[in-house]
Length: 288
Image 1 (cartoon, rainbow, N blue to C red):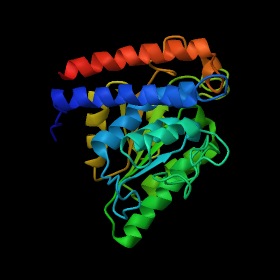
Image 2 (image 1 turned 45 degrees about the vertical axis):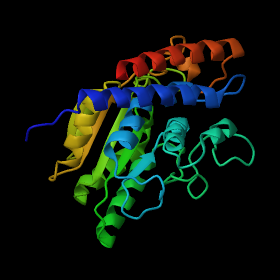
Image 3 (image 1 turned 120 degrees about the vertical axis):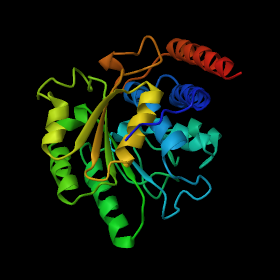
Image 4 (image 1 turned 60 degrees about the horizontal axis):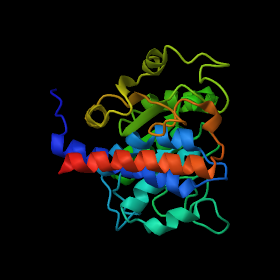
């Protein structure tokens, strides 16, 4: 089957949205308080493509039964999801500034039934794909035709439950499940490969019965094609291994494990915002 590429105009719009998402992420986190800058920024392009390109989703009705579902299994990266939901007006943009405050709907990890648009409680790593499998089975039982997308961190792959779930998905022919691996190569304090071997990652997923594709996780054209491929593959579930850069978009955060969950200074916050605003301006000019 031939693959249809996203148009250059739509791609430019999507790149602009991703740039805006990164700016919202850094602004909502602010300075002098520990946040997950690295993982949120590595996942931004993937989350952007899901919400603004791929998913069947009605922002006015985030609980619409036939909507596609997104599970942020690496729950600490939920600021990327919050940014997308706010830009879609699922909740007000101004609410982003309440991130991790007492009483806020926007907690540091996803809380189902608290935050509009959040499909499951995650953050205890390794559980998201099991949750996605359950949703896919529910769709079958209820005769709904929705897709379930699950974003998993590569460090999270050290959790055994991921592989139990990865065996379950093909076993039950849950072809409406797509696993997306954010392979930024780093975890909290070291490389993702430290402690347990992950490679050959593609072969490991394929050995469980998944179709696998590897992409550049910051190339939105590749991401869109891969998402289309995954949802058009009727015979087995698909896994997309997205090679990303932890902290993508902010020069002093990129590829630094120290920013997995750490505060930045007010000066660093201003620098990060300046870099992201310049990038957003470049993307906007490209649209004109």
